[in-house]
Length: 333
Image (cartoon, rainbow, N blue to C red; front, side):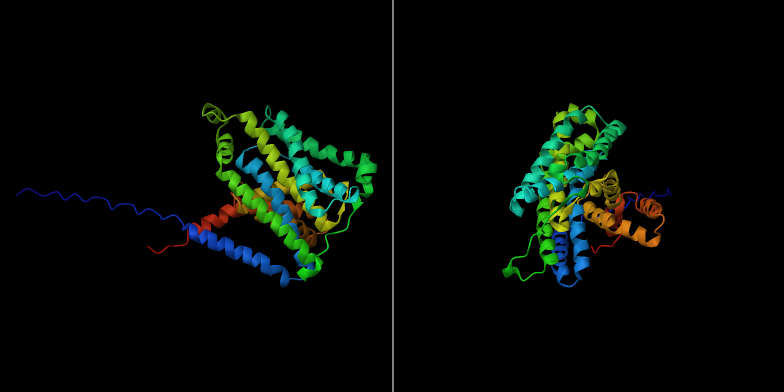
């Protein structure tokens, strides 16, 4: 009697279902509702801190386009932030332009300068590109101090903050917060639409492999220049809103440390993700002050150690860590 061989087929692998896109919209709606509700429950100083988080998030959104999505390095992002801040301040102080009109002008000035920087950046990459952008951040401060008649020199410019209209019933800190929130929401919607377009796909191809992207018909010079221009535009818009919130600009507020801190905040928040700039804004706003509170003598050491710890725990940034935790949540079939 011959033995009968029983062949058992392996059970089919059960594919993990992608997250329901409706939950993403629900999460965004809840986050926006919390953002609107927050200034009515917090003290004025904490409202100011949240406002600055939004300002830095807009600036990091531009840096994320350049570094996270286009794969280009920049150590001079703080310079474009300063250009937007001073453009808005000069328009308010010298020309008495209405506050809403200063925003597109400041963003446009930064866009043009980013476009000009993008031309030499077409032939540079890696360390060489980083050194060029670092040089821009270094010589900007003495340049601002030199033209004292326009920029106010070392003393800077003092400006009046936007006053809340009587019909709003809001305090000054709440009004500034909502103005910044509107700008931030508009900036994130613009960035999300840009990344879904042909431009976004070209930037990703440029980041992944320049040679393959060129073979596929992507114009490297055009999209590199465009990435710098878009990045500078977001930084300029953030700098203009910074002027509204602070009511004062001076060259010493935009040293090279600002550019390095912004880049560190983006890496910690998460490169190439839309939540990354928000988390990076929280990092830029709160971690330096925490470092100062821990040790007045060596805040830089504490700041560096915190970056190392975060990078060890979350190599892809806080946004990547959150994404991995969400994927581990079991889902019902």
